[in-house]
Image (cartoon, rainbow, N blue to C red; front, side, top):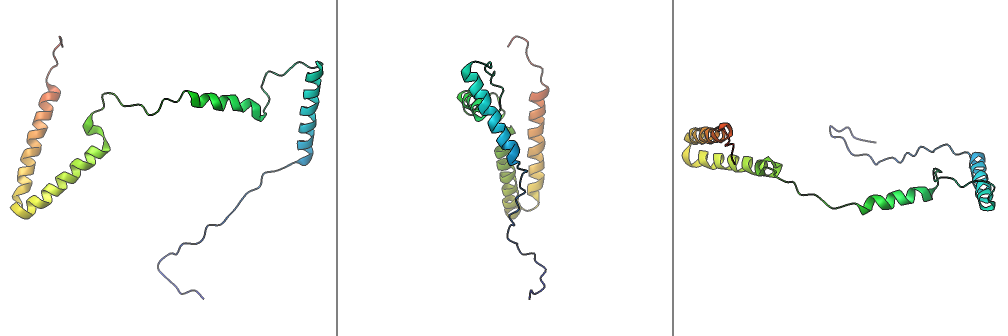
Length: 137
C-alpha cells in the first residue's frame, strides 16, 4: 500500500516501440525484381540504371564526400568582446559583488556612487558612438 505524499516520485521509463508495417511478399517481390534487373544488365538486354535506385551503394558516396569538406570551427572576425555572454555574466557578477561589499563597508551611499559611475560610462559611450567619423581614415 502506498502512503499519500505531496512529492511526486520518479517512475521508471516505459519502453514503447511502435512496429512498422512489414510485408514479406512485397519484400520478396522487390528482391526478385532487383535480381532480374541485375541479370538482364549483365547480359546486356537492359541498359544500366543511372544510379537513381535506392540501394545502400548510392548513398555511400554522398556521405563520404560530405565529410571531406569540413574545415573545423571558424573563428569569428571582428566580434565585440562585450557581446559574448560569458563577458556579460562576468560583468554582472562583478557589479553585484561590488555592490554587496560596498553596501557592507560604505552603506547605502555606494548606490549613489554606482549611479554616478554608470552615468559617466554612459556619457563616454554615447560620446564615442555619436562622434562623426573622419572621411579620410
